[in-house]
Length: 317
Image (tube, rainbow, N blue to C red; front, side, top):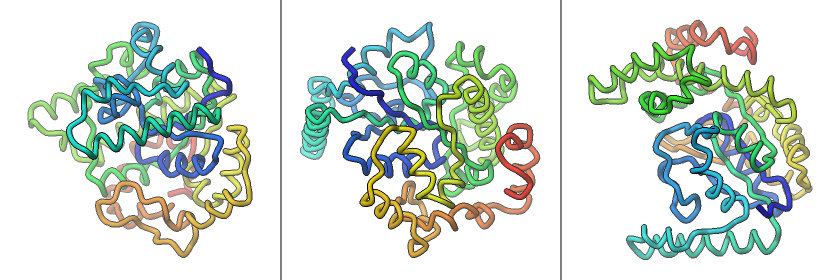
């Protein structure tokens, strides 16, 4: 392995600000941005492996399947041959050439790979141990996370957890009965829309952030930040992030971050829009209060309290 500098990684959960944070860090010319290597839609040339399950768990039992793939990523080795097998039209060819050029420039300029890996939460420790990643973990308020799922109608295939026996044993024992119940309901109805999206979100938030609590205890060298804090004081916290990642925080970068988070920007993304970068970040923090009903908010508050109290106070509700 020929890594010259620590690669960088942003984890948390989908809908937790990882995309926005990744884009703001990628304003630095010292990094090359790589989105969601664990996503099932990931291009073959970038990752050369399509994960079977959402929230893939890399561990001692299956690590040999991933070592070579991630080694290629962090060393910017794009697999042209594997990507060619997926070519369907001219647009795909243009995308391939763009990524090949991007990787080649990153390699020549000795840039550091920046992985925005929202669903790598269970694999982050293995990646850190194997490749020396500097890690930023983002935390998002349960009501904000779940309201975002509701706005975009994002459901979760709970069978993907059960497909990973080692994950169930190492992290999800306390949630096993509920995961089995939700998976069986989804199979019975041939739909991921059951149980309702609020209950799905509650279980998913508890699973993710009970794990974050454990990771924080075991990895004091990682940086853990709340999405809300970054949104309220973007300049302050992005300076902290850049410092943690050992990147230069220039005046130009600061000005761009200010423009992306300004009060002049809309507080809410357009309907159905997944990732809108320019936002009034401070007012966006409490958008969940208008997206959710009072009953939904109370249900979320009651059923996430065990873990949410480790991050949020009564005032945050």
